[in-house]
Length: 342
Image (cartoon, rainbow, N blue to C red; front, side):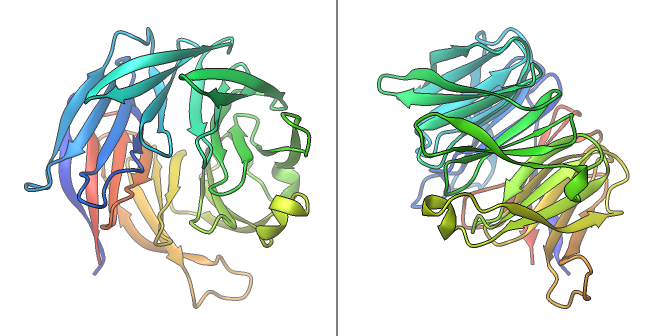
């Protein structure tokens, strides 16, 4: 019987934990796993696994920089920089300098709360989004300089998340306006345009879209929403996107009836399992359904973990290490680390 086993409950934040992100350069070649978490307590915490005890400890607290809630955090692909987005309308860039994290840059421009931050696959671009309805794309320049190269106005409401495609420089954003928008640089440098909008008319969500995640291959995407559904989308061969124009996304299936309150987070593992976390305090895991019926959902429930936390689950994220380890962050102020036992 497959089991999601709680390894450890991590305390330290003094308010709700909004988000977490694993450092992609950790968890292999003898480097201990590291992740960052961010909170309504205005701080970011860096957690590291002890290689001998396998237990986690807080290695650093990043504080006295943001003046309001830190809503989102994201490591650069090299794992050397950490970006943190805050309700104080700024995004801070932190560098690990000899074990100490220093704020080396502050990105300003959004009118109000920054909700999400994400690096592209090569670490050359950074995207941020805000309650001001805009998405900003920043170019990463030498010497920890960041230059805004595009401000994308297309959403009608608060933008909840930005996510880069895992291999292409194509950006995805999701919003309180119930849509997912796809943005691409149409040949000209920095001429970013909305190339597709996934909404109700094309089998999209009927309420706020909270999160987006891609499978390892980058040809499928899962979204989660306040409408209590998860939706899987697919695109035709990715190879076309680099040279032959944009390959549009289409709705593949909708998973409904698995959570009875808002689904805030979804994350697809390299092994093809996606996890969801919701306001019903539970975690669900889904896998490919090889025996799916014609026209039926192509994914099946692998496991449900009721009462995973005492309050809303805001973020679930699979680790980059060898073992299937999941971390979850909650309004209850804790982070839990889980291992999937087959």
